[in-house]
Picture 1: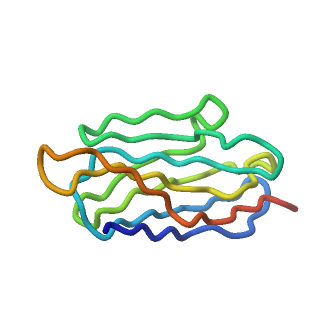
Picture 2 (picture 1 turned 135 degrees about the horizontal axis):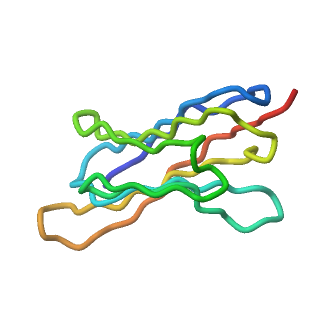
Length: 119
């Protein structure tokens, strides 16, 4: 069973930066995405990256957040700059993978990491 470990959250002032990491313990990477969750609101998609290298970002973070992947480390990152208070939330990583080439795609979630943007 592939497991995910997220890290990198914390408290930062407006305008600051953080880098979130999502590391998978195995599997053949298909795609990964970051979401954020705020109490009382729907989970919001932030960014995605697929195995071919293409990535997409939500309009609310475009130009400030960048999703990337380190193949050797089987890790996906979310680099966040120019953070705003409205970026506050729990950031969750969704990882889609195959147990073997050509196998079915499986989806798992990380445990979440808290990001708080406050003066």
